Image (cartoon, rainbow, N blue to C red; front, side):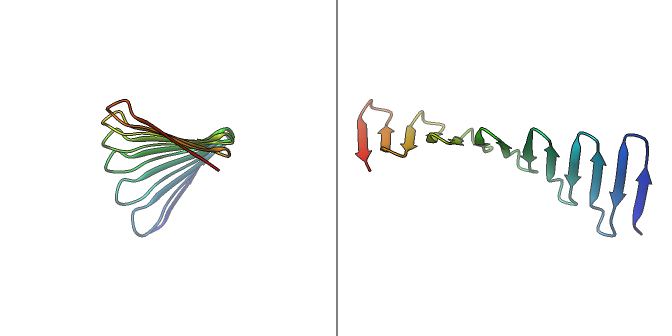
Length: 110
């Protein structure tokens, strides 16, 4: 039941479980039977699952955004988080800074 299709632009493989793998000069795209999608290319890797969750990985850092709109950015400088309520947390090598919806700031040093 495996399917392999090779073209000038790339190769598409479908396995027995219905999973699809597409490999091109630009990168590799994988979609499993649950509808999860992963795109790998020279610049970065992006994931989008069936719930609408998204994660992008690049040389600069990691950015995640879930179905609720929560986001996390992870890079060499640290980690920044922002949830749907507008709360933010910044984590760096020097420490952590937290900001709540009331404008309160809590900074934790290393």
